[in-house]
Length: 396
Image (cartoon, rainbow, N blue to C red; front, top):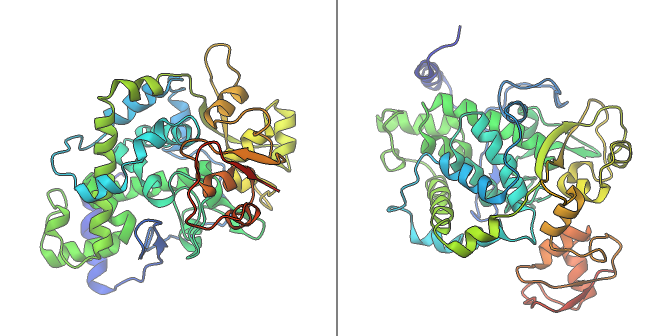
């Protein structure tokens, strides 16, 4: 029998009366201090299950393809916001994330394609699209991002949390670097938090950052009610946790307001491939699967860093495969166009890269599969060097 949403809460609160829990931490790149993503991972096999989940990525596929247009993706995001009103967003975080609208609409990045996949997955699960902004905060929407503190991937899971939510982290394969698998895990976790916190998206965001038990303990001490509680009414949590909510709200407001700019909307109004989560069956490598299924190996390596030269020891991995481009543009051509590369620059073996507007040493290094440190050394640059459009950088 399915319990009402509120029924989950007393059980958790009762458990809190008996014991406290320790929480593994994950570091958000712009927060500067550790923050837990999942304090209580339930036992789960280390292998990623290939059974269709009740919601999330596979449910999104069942709902049918999203319109292959960047503007339609953006409107889907706006429609799914729990709190589109922007009068109370904080100026500090608006300034901090002022680059986000430009990055989302920049054809030199894969951000819009990944954003579309996350929005579609959240909408299929009935979750607010504010949560599609979590990867902006955690990783800058870079599926191969790694932190020195240990977290990795689009959602910056730490290893113990990842395993607790069904992701495989083992020598030679890291499921956190699979946007398909990590998004499925993140949506599943957010769905469970949404049930626990009765649809209060702000408390869900706080719990994603600090852990549900920590937020429930603070709520109990503050004497609040879950459905009506606000972050300000809950005392005793880390400043990072309170700021986490404001970051998501500021990002939502920046994107909401960008939608009023004609030029920005026009930039989104173009064909966009749909990234579909596909189980790579009957293959032992990404290159082997792409050859058999008439796909571009370079494109798939870019969207699936977990499988770039790696393969899980058992089970069938999921991968994001671009499909559904309308008109005469092929998927490979569309994804190449969105990455801002020409034929010469698209190859990992290119000798040089010409800097474009919005490029950074990190994004260039990620694209060509070299370390940022190596890129800087090759070009006699320092970490704080400014890259200007037109500069030609050596890659080897």
